[in-house]
Length: 228
Image 1 (tube, rainbow, N blue to C red):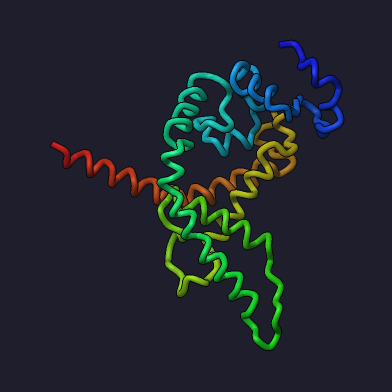
Image 2: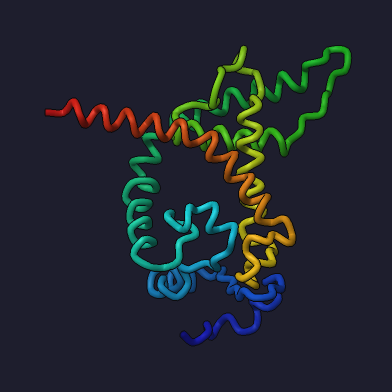
């Protein structure tokens, strides 16, 4: 496809250098419409890397899957089910319920030591775990993986800390430099430690996700068996 006439050399000033990947920055709404609607097949696929394959279970999702039948099927599911306005309204109350614990936790941390008022609140820590709660509530129906905290102002537990850390580790390693991405014959040697970090992060995520998924699958199969 021909390059955008209005784009010129602008993207060269806004795209960081990469050894093997090419990027096009699109800021114009009209161009974005062309990219997302008329030329999906050209722009939909992302580079396949060791980490993206691990984190997407060999590209069974929608975000990292190359353009093809699986990508089209998952995009249809996202459009009709996940990103629909009806689903947004359905889950609005769950997101709203997360605001109060956030404010109470910040207030408790700030005022925990009356002899030393004005305690510093770690904004990164609070934001990361707030996002983690916002993900777990709609997806799993609960904020904590195991035991409930003593009070609503309690912070994240051990499993929640491990979960958020693994998620951000996965994000940081998705398209970071990995020798085996450029030389596939080196997969398994893990010369730079990238593969081990990716596998460890995914192992933590699976350890926390799998029991909930298996429980839901068992409940669903039991319900279907009861249907005459």
